[in-house]
Image (cartoon, rainbow, N blue to C red):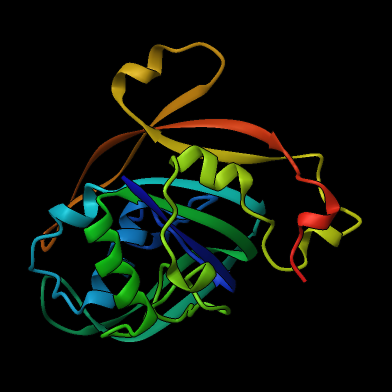
Length: 228
């Protein structure tokens, strides 16, 4: 097993979990389905192609900077009604995260991660942070996409802090670390485990199942391990 690290940073991100009709939500950190969708785009896969190999990657997220939850009220004109007939106007509430910074780790077979890393370096299709209007502000690959021979937890805990966040005087004492676990880990003491409906099965039609995510808080590393 190997680990590939990504940095997801941008002025706006949206990682919907339960978006329905006129309300488009966002989670507080990148979703598994959103990240897998980004990998599929980099590889040039259509929405109808299998994603089993990408969905099998184990994912973790370190929240280096919590995004600020924002709401955008939108009005769309000339939308055809589902029942047919006259065109109508649709209003929607769209939530997103502003100025979030996330270190994402993917753990899996080395050959599979090498293919993913090469695709992210030269993506076939444009990449975005949850929605097409939200491109990344920084290159996604950490360390030029070099793989790490370590565990997912170790890679996320030991990597230097993203960008200039460590030198921010308002930085918190601890940050969140979210690691994908097996159902059996849900019974372990000392961590909070929740069920999330963001394990992708297919993108056409959109089909998801449950995955288990353990959350804990880890301290910030020393100042001299921060970014420039």
